[in-house]
Image (cartoon, rainbow, N blue to C red; front, side):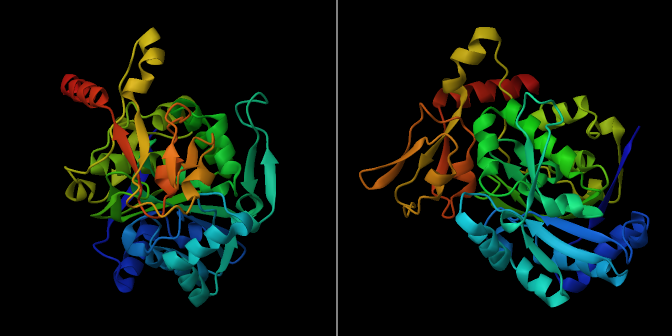
Length: 385
């Protein structure tokens, strides 16, 4: 069974251009009325990682949100825009600031769209789909109450999962510091990927529309570099949307944990043979997209004894750090200490979740690889080629 993904060329963020491309996208997906009508409540789940301006390519661009919301409102749908930003802040202040700085609050006010700060909404605790032995999944209640959830991620790299898109974006449906709890409960990439998929499966977005007009390469999801790709990517299968996006920018999906586990759990298609990609994907392909590679397979005992040599550890640049303490509060295992007037990472306690790197507002947390890891990585890549 194949999964259909639609790619639309969108060269820039001019309103008239984005609106035209979004309308054409909906037409190719069966028409707007096949997704919503005057009786529908539609929640647009944006990517609102933190308070970053649109040109930083960290958050979903407000013009794309505006165009999608406008199309929905024209058929009478009740439209909401919601998310919970990363970090541990009381009362949802960081999410509120992120809505404002990203420009999404402005377009929502312009259209009369309801903004929902998940950190301030009611929550629902659901049994883990993998069984009672795993932690319950806590989601913002509006996600479960909507008739349709439209998932609107940003095409970005990710320091832990390599890529973040439609699947990972639903992690923001978890409000407040509960997100930190999952990192603590599942510190390894394999374990954490399972929780990402638990959340994705329960939040159940009906449609994913990815903003890949300006993507992020390098050390995403917040400290990378904006990179023009010129694509909107959409489909009802979020896993397939992510796989198509990865193929567009040259990120191999075969050994990425989220894709492997999603396939095993029947949550979506990622195999190239199972993707039905329509549109100018070949013309938009980026051949030199930069991303942090993973995939250093170790046998048996070496997987345990060699992990410290093969891991990239966060290092705080004292020259860039302003001691705001966001990294320390975000660390799920309290591996960051404030010593002699500066923040320091205790590598012996670090679980390499990279929350500090992801959430630092000043890009002061760098990921440093050992010389040994770099050498092994080069050998591994040469063997793969």
